[in-house]
Length: 238
Image (cartoon, rainbow, N blue to C red; front, side, top):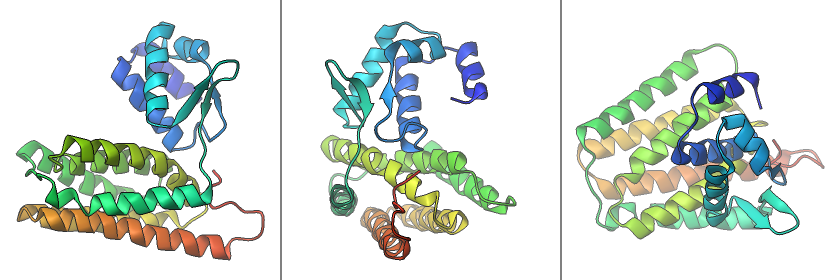
């Protein structure tokens, strides 16, 4: 882990929820790629906390299918095959289309302001020279995902979408390490702006279809990359 991350951890011990979010984000950005073994004692030492909250966070990650916990083996970041990844994304598409039909709710002013702040941050990211930061981009994607989820009135639907998002985003970010990063950030900006316009008139069905359509288009780009990649190059490799 980067020295800066260790310094931040040393200054302020995270709450159990913050710890869970940080570990999940590391899995998403492939700081912990599939197959990585996670040590309770090492994480407790890094974050300056006892092993109990670490164990609780790892158990939550296991419930979401991001790690496996086995006696004699320990905690390991899970992996999915290409077919399983595609199935998970296809299910995400189907669930996204249901966002506007399962007790949708309008966003409050603070949530709308957060959506605008995300748009401004994405524009700023694109304005920077060179390849956009994957870490910064993943954080903006997470924030956008969280805002859109507030539209979902059904707790069960929201829970399913949440789990599938974090099951699949780590493979998407892994693929983007070999894709045109600036182009992907631009696609994301379009999704944010389209979602804003839909929410201005509380067109919740449009919000769901926008989400579904962008996932579908991303899958098409990933498929093209797989077809054009040289032998031995894995589209999900970090």
